[in-house]
Every structure is written in structure tokens, then in C-alpha cells.
Length: 302
Image (cartoon, rainbow, N blue to C red; front, side, top):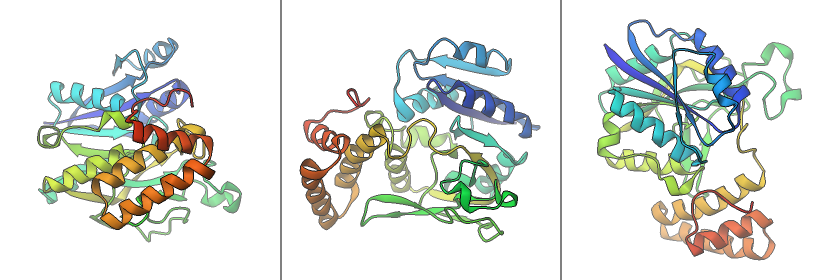
């Protein structure tokens, strides 16, 4: 029997975790041996009340906030010790939608032996769209957040295909993709031995891009499964445009670009960093300074 660990991380977002666990009833795990795991990233004690409502769930208390990277690393390592063949990494602000999610994603691995990571189609959860007022009521829950993607190496950012489009079946295919989403991905556990885990010093942002690059170099492919889907309450932990996201994106983008990009792109990043020092927002300035100082982990003082 295939063993699948389903792992999420909570940091004082217990309502989202509760909603995520409640939606687990939508997921068919018959024929699979599953481990449900919540990693507590140093939350307040009320998480115990949330998790205790679901007897099937195990939880790990870290005692400090290690971010997306550190939190999920703890979960993946626990899953590996449990003997997982595959690990589903999924944000706690996601919701299960398709009962056959796992089985359809596992089929991608069965049909493609060099597959290392698989992500499903991801919709904005209803009323969590970036431009919610743009859509008629009938289209709520059908607006795409991720339908495969690519990495823009000129600008050092991931690009989601289909974002903000209403789903009309235009991205129902299953195919290789350049970029899978850390919001929800299924990973083959042999990856951990050959490639390792997320780079914890990044805390959040670009840790998934770095991991993907290392997985590619190890000879694995990334896949998008457009025949299955989840909902995502977008950016509930680190709000887009917040000081924290400003800081982490600035700092980690410099690190990632200087590790993987071409020389001309590295030069462009350096020029942008200098510009941020003079006219950037305060969090961007600090991100640049901390990159050059070698300050990593949690963005204290933001």
C-alpha cells in the first residue's frame, strides 16, 4: 500500500487550519495509508484546541517560527521517518476540493518515472480573488490562481499561467511545467535523500524555487496536473505588499538570482539593490542591507 503523508504548517492561523482539516472530508484516501500532520511553527496554545478536534491528525510543536522552509522541513523529515512514499505539502489556507486529488497526482508519477514534483490546478477560494468585484457570482470559485507556470529568469520571479482567468477548461491538460507551486505539491520521498530539503535560512519566498532548481539538476521533472484542483485563500500568512513580504522577497531574490541567474541578470539585480537603498521602501532597504550583511532567517524588526 502506498504511504502518503499530508503535511501543513500553522503559525497562529488556527481558523485556516480548522477549515483545511474540515475540508479533508472531501478527500478520498481509500487504498492509501495516510499520515495527517500539522506542524506548529511556534503558535499560541490555542492550536491544541483546533487540532484536538481531529483525532486522525498528528502535530509537531517546534516552539519557534521557522517560516515556510523550516516548518515544512520538520514535517517532511517526520514523514520520511514514518516511511512515506510521497509527501503532500499543502498550505493551511488551502481547501480540498476534488476527492480524487491524491489519486490523480499519484497517477502522474506512475506514468512518468522521472517526475519529482506534481502540483494541481489551484483556484482562488471564493471571495479571495485579487479582483473579487470583477467576477459574477457564478464564476466565484472558478478563478484560476495557478495552472502551471514558468520562471522568468530576466526578472527572477515565477509566473503563474492563467492567473485571474475564469476556468473554462483551457488548462485541463496534464503536462511538464517549469514551475510548481509550493502552495500544494506532491513530492516523491526519494527526493529528500538525493536533493535534501528547503533552504531554511530563506525562511519564506524563493525556498521553493531553489528546491526546484536542485531537483531539476538531479534529473527530475516537474508536472502540472490540470485534471484536479484545490482552493487557496491567497496570502493569509504573509500578506502581499506587507513589510514582511517586501523584506523577504527583496533579500531572497538577491540570494537566488546570484546563485542561479546569468551574469547580466546578476548585474541588473545589483543595480536594483542600489536603487532600493536610495528610493526603496524601508523593508526593501533592510532586505538589501541584510543580504549583503548575511543576515538570514526570521525578519526581526520588520
